[in-house]
Amino acid sequence: MIRCEWGGTSPLYQQYHDEEWGVPVHEDRTLFEFLILEGAQAGLSWETILKKRNGYREAFDQFDVDKVSTFSESKIEALLQNPKIVRNRLKVNSAVLNAKLFLDVQKEFGSFDQYIWQFTAGKTIQNSFKKMSDLPANTPESDAMSIDLKKRGFKFIGTTVCYAFMQATGMVNDHVISCFRYKELLTQL
Image 1 (spheres, rainbow, N blue to C red):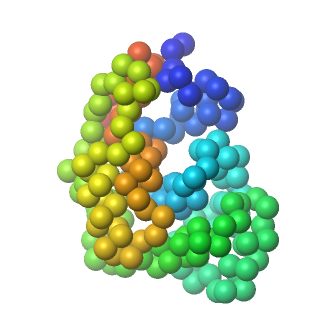
Image 2 (image 1 turned 120 degrees about the vertical axis):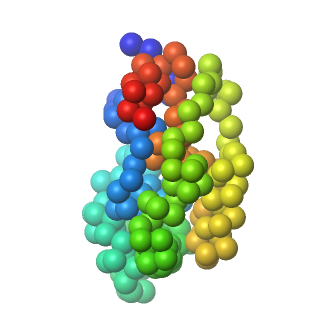
């Protein structure tokens, strides 16, 4: 079975590659989860975040945005002592701030899904890269997303983070054309 190069480098990556990466996500709780995880990943490997994903789910109340938006200073201090997540004050504070802003977006657009998918006109961008080195770090769509999210006050949401979010949530299909998931995801669109 042929996968994207990175998809077979560890059992954790293989499962994520085969089951999640590039699958379109429209459920707000999952979109919130990826928004927080991609921000936490900034400067680190995605494998580090995947290893801590269950810890994040525990620490951030299963990514219940209403609950995260009300985290107190004492809760934040407790999170900064939790070895199951990345204990970076700026990233933890941004997760709480981003939760509050996420709720504002939901109120304005009816759902975060309605808002975020506008950057790809509501459809998955179907790329056709032959090798992983062809994949961009950002695109005009991720640039626009980053600019708009920053304008709304979101943190840890640069264009590279936005593009990784787009890949994770199926806003783009960046599986290389030789990967078995490339064709599988084409049929799901």
